[in-house]
Length: 306
Image (cartoon, rainbow, N blue to C red; front, side):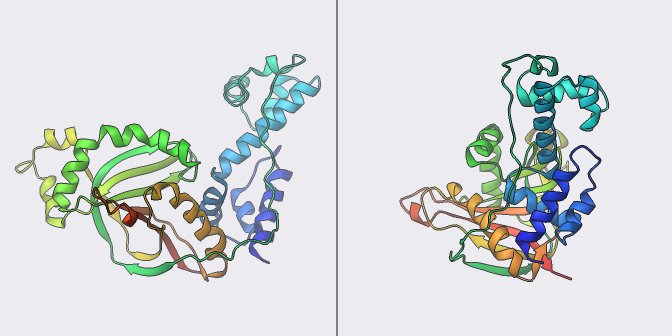
């Protein structure tokens, strides 16, 4: 059983059970993966969570049924996993832009989210520099915010969502850089992945003693600590796959592609799989004319396959 066949089997299972209760563990088993590994890889490759894919596919089919027949709204809602007409109507309108009753009118415009298909084509041949590192646990200090969706969304979508976060914490970022004595390196931590989204930290590698001092009222004060919103970020020990973007002026345009490349091409034949844990993006920036030295490291938590 190869990687492509496993993913195809999982998608087939999901599509065959869109009108039933879908067992995520069974979907993962079809690809011979653990549930966590399958959902994490699915999210990275597809840019959406498995739950989002299922929801969009069900609402697509629900819209087609309402537009093409005499099905009752309540029957369609129950068929596709909604407990009440109200919850179905809310989800339907968010996806299609119209209510279920409006969808039954002739000429109404509906949205369609197509089925995923894995196409076998001659790809690869790319050179990806990487290293595997075994790191002890360490801590960072940073600002946290929770975002909906997945980190693998198109760059323009993700940048738009995170722009306010970066702007509103700008002063704090200068504080972090000063505490770390490093204005050229910034850490982005992604963790606590779930169907509702993920946590994202803007962090700095601050000396351990300063992290502890920061939380002591006699040195900083609870009010200042709460005002700044800084908190420690715990990074567990383990193995990491570390990849680097090319040196260029705008590496932010490159790292999402590199993330997908690592999971789709390197991971399947590597003897490793993703493990639970955060992902880390280490941005190396320069403010002078050395812009060609700008790059981003991507750290993915991995472990040996059993």
